[in-house]
Every structure is written in structure tokens, then in C-alpha cells.
Image (tube, rainbow, N blue to C red; front, side, top):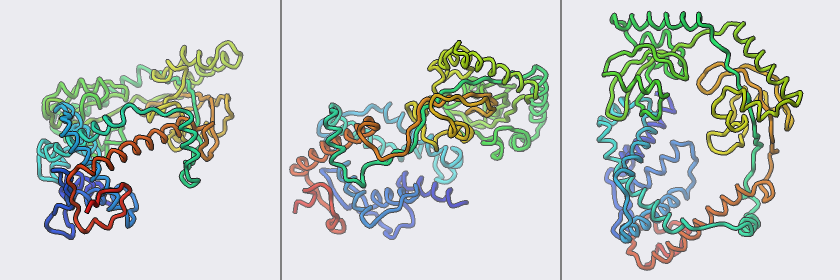
Length: 447
């Protein structure tokens, strides 16, 4: 097992609360807030989770974690006093999201169950109380801070109050538009590829191992080395056509050829529940010829002639001719999956970045061939709409970023003020080992 996998396993152990190999054999209560307890393993779990995520802890890290837990327990205690409720459906949804994260991280649901020697349902139950507490504290925090707003003058005051070292450095970002043309596969190429898949499917039905054939023939680089194992997935996580076929299979059965936005598949159902399915697949794609690539470039060239002759703006050309469904309706503008229209250089596809880095604002690239997010070949033209230079944040260029930071600080100040007041009327006991911590909020050590 490599170093990264060891880190992931450690993170899983700690998140589930099964802290092992720690110096103290017996866990102990290190603080009580109202009737809520904080355990030694709570602090240690979060401490080693930070290490597993690549953080470098300092001598103050454990105390910072401990104070964060004190605040969480105070919020939780008040949420129960105020009879704030969380629906079980909300807990279930959060649990499903957490499990998907861990399954994707460790590789498959089976690997997760094998490591902990528990069923998925049992692992989820280990999380249930912690998830419910987190949802309650989040809702209590929202009760305290949900109505805040930040004015432009407050943003400017916040900026002026920042120490020079705390003013964020803003990396270069670009706003990009694109026109995409997909080469048309010849019917012969599709026919030949389907015949290969049909032959492989027959070999599986005749008794050959699906996983072995996936390693040999699948064109999905992400799963081929794992014998085509896609892992556990919900319908929402899969291509619609793939999901439709997968959820229609019985355990152990193999689908007919399925066409999705990724290509053509044969799918094997390894296991399933009511709302999730574990599958293997073998993916194949038709092979493009030089003539088909040339035809796609020719179509793109004709679009560029219209743009360069001012017959069409880039935006209108994208809406009329681009074959990328997501960006076409926005006049070709590429939306960052993380939100917004701006892309940092390390967020771009490497091929797109190599094209965009040499363009000036408003300039078009030459047509080039690349692959889309689903691995399909596509001919593209990019236009650089805007680009920012790397700089220290300032209110003129980075108002929204500073507004977000100011709002976060305002929320923190409101919660901290509430905590200072609530400490005075809440029973709090702290273990002597943590009484030397330098807390950011006054009053934890009342005696």
C-alpha cells in the first residue's frame, strides 16, 4: 500500500472515530459543555486528519481544534435548548454524501467494508450521531448569522484593517469563450467498433472473466486497470443512459451495448441496492479517420470566416454553431465548475491553457484538436475575453472577494460575541491538560 493510500485509510479511520495506535489506551473526557462531552479522541482525530490532508500542524494546533470543539458543543447545546430540529431525511442525505466521498477515496464500497469489517449500513450508523450534531450546529450558527449583510463601506474598512501579511494574493485569472465542433464518425467506424464489443460480450457470456477483458480492451483509462470497476454509484452520478442500463440489470448480468455521452459500453452489475449500483464496464469509441478530422476543421474554418468578416459576433456564432451544449447557450462562455466564469491557470485543461496563455484580450486562437471532459475528440477555437495579472488584492479589482472575506469575519465576530455571553450561563469543565491553551475567546476558564 502506497503512502497516499495509507493517508487515506488513516483519514477514514479518524473520521469514523476508530482512532487506533494512540498513546492512551483508554479514551477520556477532556471537557464538558452543558451536558455535551468532548473526548480526547475527538481532538486527536481532527489533529491526524489534518496531517492526512497534508497540513503541517504547529504546537498550537491541538488547542485550536479543542476551542473549535468547545464552540461546536456550545452551539449544539443551545440548539437543543431552543428545540431546533433536523429532519432524518436531511441526516440521510448528508450520510449518503459522506459515504460517496469515502467510497470514491478508498476505491469501492467493498474495499471500505473489507477494511472496517462492517457493512455499509453499520458504517453509516457510526456516522449518524456526528452528522446530526453537525447539522444542528450549522443550523444554530445560521440562526445567529443568517441575516447579516456587508455594505461597501464595511468592505473598505475591512480591507484597511487587514495587516499587510493577511491581504490575499490573487493569481492570474482568465475569462474564456469557446466554439466546439465534434468530428462526425463514419458509419463504418461505428459498425466495426460495435462488432468488437459484441464479440467481447459473447466471450463473457461464454464464461471468460469480465475484469480480465476490461483490462485488455477497455478504453476508459480510469477504470481499465481495475478490471473496469466503476465502484458504487447513484443514478445522479452516472451518465443517464449508463444509469438506465445499469439499474436495469440483475446482479451478475451483462448488458447489451449501451451508447452514452462517453462512448459505447457493455456493463456488468456486480451488486446493487435500491438506490445505488456497483458496476464494471468495458468502454470503446469509434476511431476517427484523417478525412473526418479534416471535415471538422473545415466546418470550424467556415465559422471563423463569418466572425472575422464581422458577419457574426463570436457570441452569436457560438450560439448558432457550437456543439458544446453547456457553453453554447452562454455565447460560448466557459463556466468554471467551481463557480463563476473566471479560471485560474491551474484549473484549466492543460491543452486549453497552452493555447490561451499566448493570446491577448479579445483575440481568437487558431483551431486545434483536443479532448472534452468525457474524452471525446473535439476541434475548438478559444477567445480570451479578459485576463487579470497576479496582484495583491485591492477593493477596486477584487471587491467581491474582499466582500466575502468581510462577511466571513462579521459572521465569526457575531458567533464569538454570542459565545462569550453564553459561556457565562453554561456549565463548562475543562481538563487541566488543556487549561494552558491560549484561547481566542475569553471566559472558557471561569474558575
